[in-house]
Image 1 (cartoon, rainbow, N blue to C red):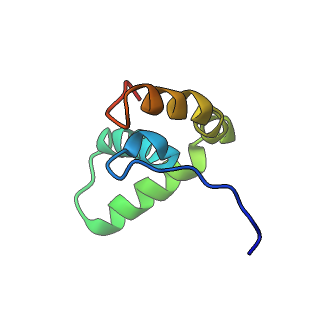
Image 2 (cartoon, rainbow, N blue to C red):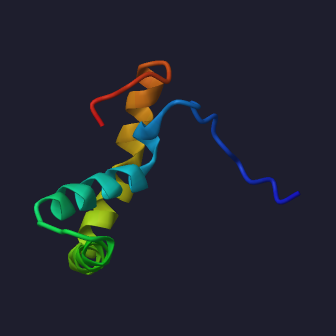
Length: 81
């Protein structure tokens, strides 16, 4: 109805999803902390989330053109991203 142009999205490609990479960054930071229960895990995760610079998120989003190009060049297959 609004004629939004969409691109084909390879079904098995996390390479095109910047949030996957952000989760990876957060996971590595949280794993560095010693937590012994779910409440500590939540607290550590929330603290690391707050510490994540906006520039990190911007860089992931700004890398999308390179990511899309790499996936297209690999016919939808895995890339270095």
